[in-house]
Image 1 (cartoon, helix red, strand yellow):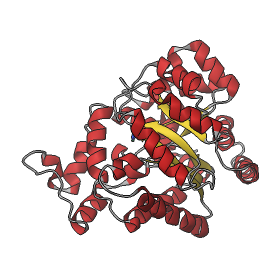
Image 2 (cartoon, helix red, strand yellow; image 1 turned 30 degrees about the vertical axis):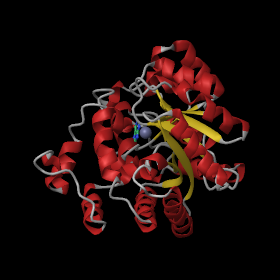
Image 3 (spheres, rainbow, N blue to C red; image 1 turned 180 degrees about the horizontal axis):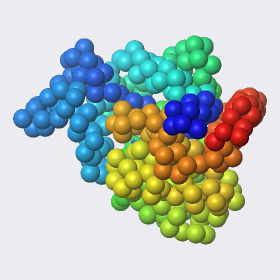
Image 4 (cartoon, protein in one colour; image 1 turned 60 degrees about the horizontal axis):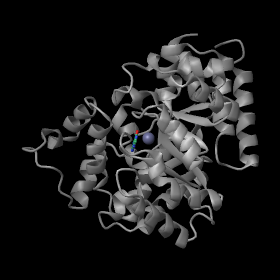
Length: 355
Ligand code: HPA
Ligand code: ZN
C-alpha cells in the first residue's frame, strides 16, 4: 500500500475522540481575531515576542519545554473567549474538523474554572458548547459528550464549588455534562487532593476520568484509580513503569486515552516511537488515540493516527483492536456503540488484505 493509501485507510477508520480540550482547539489566527473583536489585550511584544503575530505564536508552540510552559500559553489563549457565540463557533469548528478526519463520536473536555475566574459565567460556556454539539449531530451525525475538568493547580474547594454549580443546574442528571476530569499541572498535585469530589461523583453515578501518568509517575495512575475511582486514564504513558498496574488496567479493560503528538511536543517522549503502543497491544491494554490540544501540538486526530502508523506500522487487526476498544470505552449508550462497532466491522471488511 502506498503512503497515500494508508492515510486514506486511516482516514476511513471510524474514530472516537476522548481526549480533546476544546480550549486547546483555538488556533493562533482565531485567537488574534477574537482578541481584536472582544478587545482583549494580549501580552505586550516587549514582554513576549511570540505575541507579535499568529505566525510567531505558532512558532513558539513548536518550542514548548514542558507541560507548564504549554499551560502558560493555553490559559492566555483562552482569555479571548467571552461570549456564548465564541464557545459555539470554537466547538463547531472542532467538530467540523473532527468529522473531516473520520470522527463519529467525541467526548470533549472543558475547563470551567479557567473561565469563571475571568468573570465568564459557567452557563455561558456550557450553552455555547451545547449549541455546537446539537449542530454537529444534525450536520454531521457526530455524537458528543462534555467532560467537566477541574484544574488541579487550584484548591480542592474550588473544584467542589464548580461541581456543585453544575449539579445545581441539573447538568449531570440531565446528561448535559457526562462526566468529570482532572487536568492542568500534574506533578505536585496528586489525584487524592480531589478525592472528596470524585467520591460525590461516584455516588451520583457520574462518569470519572483524570489525567494521570503524563509527567507524573505511575503512582499518579494507581492513586487516581484507587483513591478517586476513575474509570478512564488520560495519557497514562507511565503505566509501562509498573507491570502489575499495566496488567490490572488491561484486565479491567480501563481505557487509556493516548495523545502521541502532545507527548512529543511537551517532551514526555522524544519521538512517537518511544510510546508504549506495542507493549499496550501485546498486553491487551485498551487505548484510544487523540489530539489533546490540536491547535497547540501540531495536529488533529488523523495526524496522530498517521504518526502512530509511521512509528509502529500496525496491521489491520491491530487497528481494529484500537478502534473497537475506543468504542467500548466510550460513554455513549449501548445502541450507539453497536452502530459504531458495525461501522468498524465494515471498514475492516473493505480493507481486508490490504494493511
Ligand atoms: N495535560 C494537562 N492539562 C491540560 C492538558 C494536558 O495535556 N491540556 C490541557 N490541559
Ligand atoms: Zn489533556
